[in-house]
Image 1: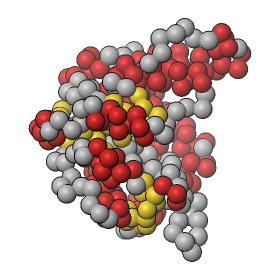
Image 2 (image 1 turned 90 degrees about the vertical axis):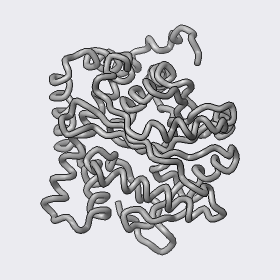
Image 3 (image 1 turned 180 degrees about the horizontal axis):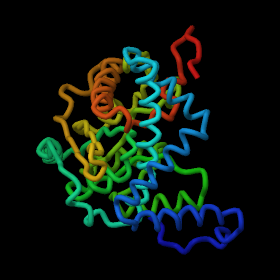
Length: 304
């Protein structure tokens, strides 16, 4: 990662709001935990009240995935989702701006032996994670047990991108652009663990349709492609905030067996089954705010 000074252009007034946001993240990261939690809840509630577009997307996703819930239960889950994601923002600030070692007492790791066994094969490991609100703090806490690289989406704001990649590169071995397939394969073949989350809709061209909560979801083919190119075991990993809102659980599952298969839809289905299982444990912590079902099978109407 580059250690060069910040370009002079970052002093331009157009970046002042970004600097303020970065400064606020540093301040929040060092606040007492309960105060930080209260701020996160307030951010979530404000977003729930004000950002109607995201509230509509969240409500649509939840209605599609939990049709068995009553209308009132669905509305409550939408509200809880915004609160959880508000808390997730202050957790992200904490993960990016502070050393994870100071929070070791807050995390329990279950199934550590599964990742250790996969790593011992000497082929590198592809860890399949999920976009929970706890994702970035989860990565920081996971680094206390296993060093790993991370695949991420670059930010459009160059200043915030610089800040974000520096923070993630401090936590992870390397932050890899999601478009850099060669970089991912190279790191895995070198024996590294690479953390990657395949639970978003990247469009028809790179996806197959596989069931997720009873919906045909456009599911990226890259998971089985990377496994095929590297021969690495694919290990599912869950990370949740516990009900006390102050402690966390990492849960590593055994590597997928006979993966990849010769059928991309079968592989995508197995990945989605894991994702659904993880979401059902703590559905409010998932990033329902994104348009997970924006790409529809031929002949089906758009849902957003």
